[in-house]
Amino acid sequence: MSSSSKALLTPVDAAWLGMDSPGNPLVITALMRVEGLEFETLERLLRERLLRWERFSQRPVRHGGSWWWELMDELDWGEHIRAHAPCDSESALREQVDVLVAEPFPHSGPLWCCHYLPMADGAHGLLFRIHHCYGDGMSLIRVFESMSDASHEAEALDVVEAIPGDGGPDRVERAWSWAQQQLAQMMSGVRHGIDWDAWARIGMKLSRELADYLLQPPDAESSLRRRPKGEKACAWSDPIPLDTLRDTSRQLGCSLNDLFLAAVGEALQGILARRDEYFGGQRFHCAIPVDLRSMLPEPLQPPEAGLSNAFGTVFVPMPMDAEKPLERVYRIKHETRRLKNSWQPLISWGLLCAGGYLPALWQQPLVQLMSHRASVVVSNVPGTEGFRYLAGCRVRDQVFWVPQAGSLGLGISIISYAGHVRFGVLADNALEIDACSLAEACEQALATMGGGDHE
Image (cartoon, rainbow, N blue to C red; front, side, top):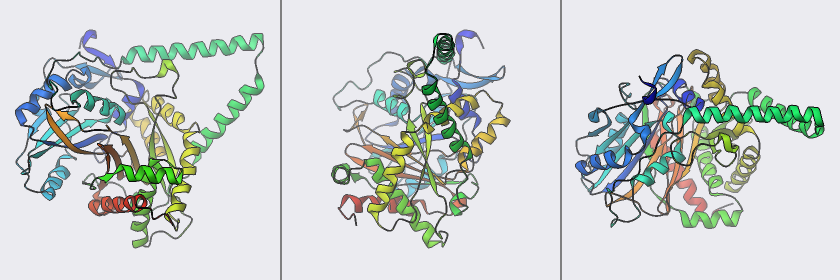
């Protein structure tokens, strides 16, 4: 492998590789329904639009104790794009997705693939699977926007400028340089006078929040915390109009995300109540990714172009004992504001960065530390406001599924697109959860809030 064909993974990208496991592959999966797109056109679109991102022509390889991006001279195209037999119904599509979502990637090439699932109604399914080390949800929305157009009249297959990787070695070098500058400024302050009170307050806040993060007890044992088997079930809700939800959020003085989390909490509360597993006082948290792009110092920020993982995780207490929807919304609002204004997102990101430098065996305690303190992962990704077109064909709708690390077996995803929002549920079979029923319960809870029933 020549130096010109390799680039060092950033520590956080390497950490996502280290946290992978056969039972819980850290793969982001997205399903689009595209009207009238032919397989041959899709193949050409991927070659001309997706591969302009250099990262999708690279695979991660272990070399000299570190992870490197290795540029492939040629891709085995059959490993990355596959056409399947037609699906004649939504239930058949769901069954096909359940099978494909658990398939392992071959390690002979880049860790992504696209499945073409033709549908009898002409709104064909495109199932994209991409390993998390390639980027987070915000990065992948940017990829989708670069592959698609805002109008069916656009020249959909124009050749566009190539996008290089994220400059891993340069970013690491800039980060070390920035840290050295901060240390030098601190030492200079020691010699010429420094505001020790200010530094003491910062140190105490950091110590307190780091201790809270590291010493937080695990979630209560429940059927939501059964050890994953590796067999997954996927489901997605019907689309829910965003306009009425925006009106509700303005009336209640909360965010859309508060409404989404409240709907998830109500659906999970129903599951635990039916199983007689909630007796009051137990700890139930959801792990929520928080975008850090606006919080990181400039030397640590990912490049504007390119793929990256730039988020931290907060663990939001779920009010499983809430008696009314309004109570649930306001309790979630309070906790999410508190946590997002804390240093917890940056602390979790920093721990992941540190974990990227550790041997794989030493990364497992970090994985368990993070996965034991939640019962579900909930990810909300804002999509595009209007319809997008792939090679002139309208993308009718889309949904995605967030992966879970360590001992977590349940992920709930929320994505907005073209004026609507959908829930996606990915549940390990060990949890014995009907993914379709859970998606429907989230949808119904959210629709009730949008309908004005806030007692």
